[in-house]
Image (cartoon, rainbow, N blue to C red; front, side):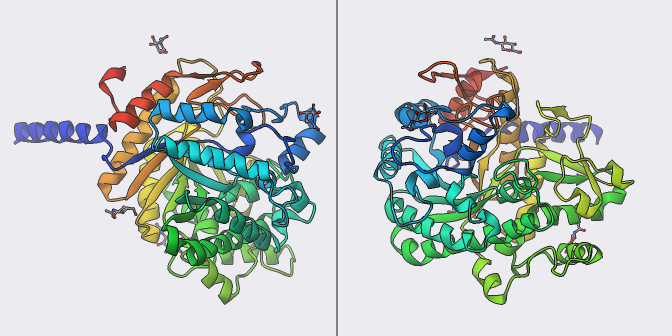
Length: 489
Ligand SMILES: *[C@@H]1O[C@H](CO)[C@@H](O)[C@H](O)[C@H]1NC(C)=O
Ligand SMILES: *[C@@H]1O[C@H](CO)[C@@H](O)[C@H](O)[C@H]1NC(C)=O
Ligand SMILES: *[C@@H]1O[C@H](CO)[C@@H](O)[C@H](O)[C@H]1NC(C)=O
Ligand SMILES: *[C@@H]1O[C@H](CO)[C@@H](O)[C@H](O)[C@H]1NC(C)=O
């Protein structure tokens, strides 16, 4: 009996090992960037100012430098396409700079040079058989719109819809995968906690207005495509969610973890992917109590009208997921214990979010390597919403090591891809994986080294050099093998 068990166990082990090795033939491999982080050319031609330009020029004392040139992709886009080709990618995910295309922020005037820049990039990729995956908005709001209140102003959804209509009208004939807004939780929760643009401190009102308006803006852009472009071009549209997987620190923290998941994912996901739409009910009640206790006349989460619930519900063609890491949720013993970071919901919910000290860490206090987290999260989302297609739109290793021999990035990517392969075996329909990032880029400075290619920011030509991770990743892209023979470690 014992022997049979051992034999069976080894057979299972060998089998699961080989399945872990392989991604399905139809699985697509990509890499990502975003406009402000790579383009530079901040004042090239008639480009308008973005909130990032304003912030970095006004607050240069923050000593993070600026992104006036960044990777200079505004001029070096041919090299970027060549890198995609060297990597053997099926997809390249980039974003459009709103203020490059619409210098005033409004659709009254379209920049000819801005329009051509993205035309060249899209055509160049398609010539090499690389699918462009295009994000419309990745944090870089036109400053003109920020002057009018930005994401806290309900009119933002109209302005965004106008912008989306221009973008589709120019590129929807060739772009089939659209991402409306990248990581609204960063835009709203961090942006209104002064951790990123627009660097506004307003976690009780601004954060939640931004939250709601981002959902409406996304939905309007989705509906425009659905009605005016989908019948002709058959493409897909989705919003990109950043979701840190959360686990209870102890048995006693299970319920709070559930509520914290609603705070993180549900506040952005429930309205779109759930059968009922709107805010997650339990969380809505919890936050309404917090608001009342402080004497505010309105609930924290701005209510949706029935029309708005219907507008937003179902506005996805797949779930676009950015995943990096996992945190543990523990009930805070006292208010004092709740630090400023990571703050998402900590104060509202009375929880502490922390790393498991036994997990390997990346080069940021909050960043752990816990590969199983991505598999659990994918299963959670499938079970919660019944989503039938997932695309991993970002995943990568947070490190500050500029070395070309980036073995930790290789190991991280390998382990997370193994878990994605296992999630597919679990029955989660993940159709592709996009690595963050194709190259080092501006990330509140230039210390983060996420890139498959390193970029020499001191070189006027911004020379790009492949790292070990680029070699590893190109084997994965070309063979779909997570443990390619050529790359044995
Ligand atoms: C563009 O910005 C750079 C600084 O990044 C500055 O040196 C240059 O003069 C500006 N060009 C124009 C035309 O304003
Ligand atoms: C989490 O909360 C939701 C909504 O209240 C509930 O439907 C679900 O069963 C809970 N899940 C767990 C694991 O407690
Ligand atoms: C997975 O998604 C793709 C793209 O939507 C679809 O063609 C395929 O049928 C799906 N597979 C399963 C098993 O649902
Ligand atoms: C890269 O680093 C790994 C481990 O740190 C080491 O074993 C390997 O020899 C290095 N490779 C090169 C080419 O330096």
